[in-house]
Length: 399
Image (cartoon, rainbow, N blue to C red):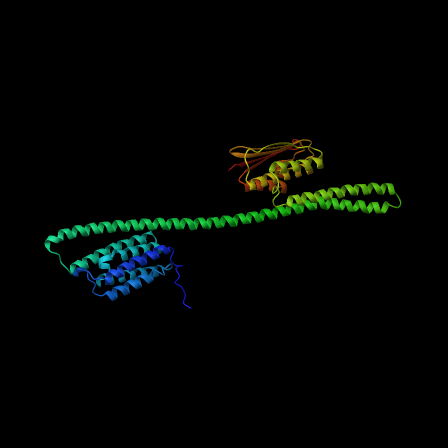
């Protein structure tokens, strides 16, 4: 089975098709009869053979080793000279081959090499004209017209070369920009994936720590209470009943910790509700567990991006968890406002506070800081022993 021709080496297939069209015109002009003997083809077979070889060379461009590129260009120049001196199609359509060699040079050389090949192409035109008309001297009256036409043609051809160089440079620059952009996008995608995996790992570690610190402690205490109740069940039933009541409280607390951990592990906490509703649920859970009703001031004038809403939800959730465990606060305020420029979140309590300089590496604080930075925001915390704690999150708002 014959294999189809592959164009993978050629970066612009439409240029290859254009080359074939120009070479076809040159081949046709080489075999067609012409009135003037000056433009007759002496060796049409040789001309067509050179054009075929010249066209096939465009299927495989050299991409490595400067020596291969120079050899490739030298063969092209030799084919152009053979075609010109054989009196072939280049006598009538010779600029086509010169344009093709300049176009190919833009695909295989840097700017310096392109300029050198363009100058060589211009010199080849001069050589072709000199060779063609040296064989047929003109009468004195026609020489002035000939030199005028030659000058006009060379000027037009020079401008065409400049246009081809500028056009190819623009096309190649755009292609390189697209390739660089694609590479940058791929690197950014891989970086985002690594950040997501790292954030997932940190979240799992945090949940594992929460389960160990809260649920593990509750179950251990529950086990001790049950063991004591069993020992006292025969000798002192009333006292054993007190231990069983305490065990029931510890079981309820352990169940609450499990539910909180499961809620934290949800990948889309706002999937079925708005951010206002989710914050209200957090405030209600906090109120049931601590007896303190948070003061919520939520003003969301514009819809927030999903990643920002999730980050805000997790930060509020982590803050309320820390307050319920460590702050011993009697008043908690949550303020969330949006403007045309930013999203501002303030979480404040009047608890016992802590020394910021000694607690900046805490897992909960670090998690909130990382979530803020992930959405391009700024994270600030101010606290002191006995003066409560205030967390400020400011995220630029890109609607």
